[in-house]
Length: 341
Ligand code: P6P
Image 1 (cartoon, helix red, strand yellow):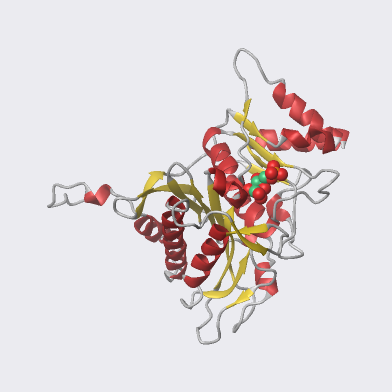
Image 2 (cartoon, rainbow, N blue to C red):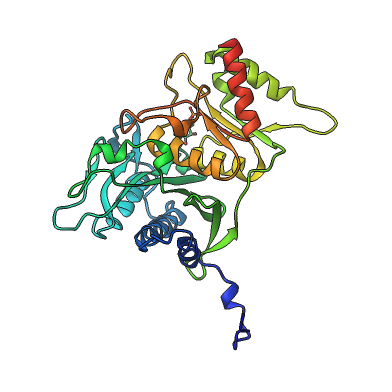
């Protein structure tokens, strides 16, 4: 390869745009639309991160006074993140339809704009009940190719089996802002450099470490769990030996708890319980995208009975139990549930 006539190391700086373009080479049929869609989402992440950093000063902490389709208080930043993602995507001609955790029904593309070949589902700001305590939160997204022929997208476009996903990712707003995504060619992480306003490659081809470091679950619900989940948790607590010990970490913000599991190894789980027979987390825009990432990083994601990505979604805001992390731990959880219910 010809040596560069320039002395700087600019060509080694991998921005998210350059990385997505290089990923595109794996897909000869690619037309660049997915690349631009991922870039639009990254831009939304930068804008949300910017608002997040001054939330306490800009009177955008706290609640809007609205209650969303989930029956949860809408935080001002929830609404802002939702609007930011929508405004950056409604006019581009890349999408057939949008679905958001904050909206009961699918969000059609305004008729004055063209529709495109992709479908975007997102949770604009997951964990937002933690925002006022300065705890990390995140945006989660899933992208599919439309299955409807043309014109306005449909609910069927949004209720596709998880293995049809063409891309998935999340943006975690924590000590730093990171954009983590997969298009099926591994998992790659980018850290926002606020001084230049760019996401730069910081974690290439992330693989979940085989030795687990943490397990992550809200143990406050222990008495509501099934015997199998209780016994699995006690098994994890008993993993102390010369060679291995596993600590418990639980933030209560799905993206943060998953991000730590992805980088450190271990398992996060939000099981069903007597008060939440379907679990709490949403399938289409939380469990499915994180399951795609987990599998691409060498891990697994299960309901406790079957792989998340094998589920056929029935409704937009459908809940699911979730066990996600190291494959052997996920399979152990399934075994305890199989044996003890
Ligand atoms: P709990 C946040 O409200 C959230 O939806 C996820 O981000 C998080 O994993 C879960 O709920 C925490 O729920 O019942 O432990 O407070």
